[in-house]
Image (tube, rainbow, N blue to C red; front, side, top):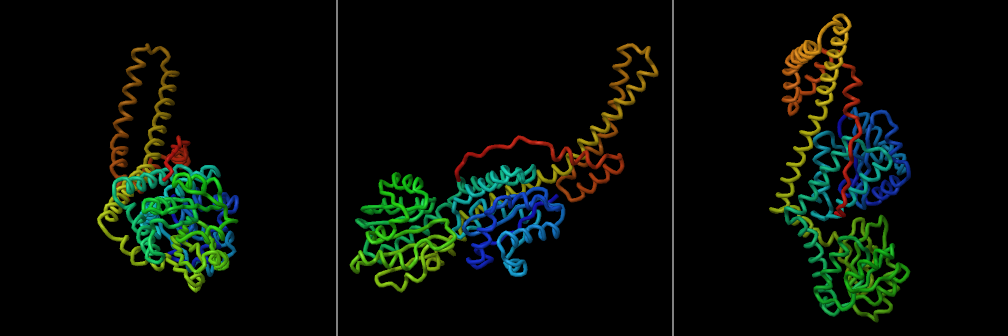
Length: 438
């Protein structure tokens, strides 16, 4: 079995198509549908506002790609012919590298965004709940989360997201005069919204209002900013009172349409307003650019900032951490493929020794305990010496491709039941809980 990822993201697809796939994979039972297909043994679906990726442990590349692609097509209602043009595929080491890169925030629209860690953890937890994540994907996602945490803790990669917010707010301040003393509306309650709100508060915003579809989340962020929270029903009024609006939700559709903004503007009596859209897909209708007194700052406007975050010492350091952690996982993966054969071989030897000692006991019932003990120890020493070289050699070869063919040869030479190594490999394991919120 090998790791496969089939995905679609903001880099490979129009936003409208990505939204259709995102909504589709939210259906109950999606993971089980994939698990019941022949080539897929384990599966985890990662769905965020700018990507949908299926990670699978599969016994065949082409069969696995076909199974995952067919499922995404069925769930989204997008014909396979159209969908396949926008899918990307990674296999084995490249699939591992891709996931670890995603976990470190190196594949995000905003380099260094940390929200992905929480999304990864929730995706893995959902797969565990559906009983579709086993030994391989457990280890893969645990190590990916560790790589992501290290990248954020050991480098300054988080500064990339901060730079984007800072530059976006600088553009907003230029449009309305200054941040100090201004009225602010923050739409969203995630990490980017919190960062924007905290930055505006430090810069002297007079009043911060937080709106979110989940009132509890809005209240929590508003409290941390010494601000107020409102529901989405009050957006028009909140826009009318705000000098700066920052929106960064995880919604798949427009949050602030042109009509809502236009009605809010009527309360402003011609005073300018800056709208900062840091979301992907976009939160704010592009049509608001045509409204008088409105300055729209979005990710397209900030492309130069986004490009500048993709290079630098911190990004290089994060990539080095990812490379190191990928190497560690691949070494574990190779060892885990070979180890069951070694265990099965030792188990088979123990069975043969036990059977022969029982036969000897029945043929020589007069042996005293001392002689019997010495005889058993001698037989086991002989067997251990005979098995020593092949078992040591197969372990030495775990880092080389021939290690797997050597393990296959051991199974054939010693007549091992092919189900025995498989049983060892699929034995239950203690799954670790990860309480970090990313």
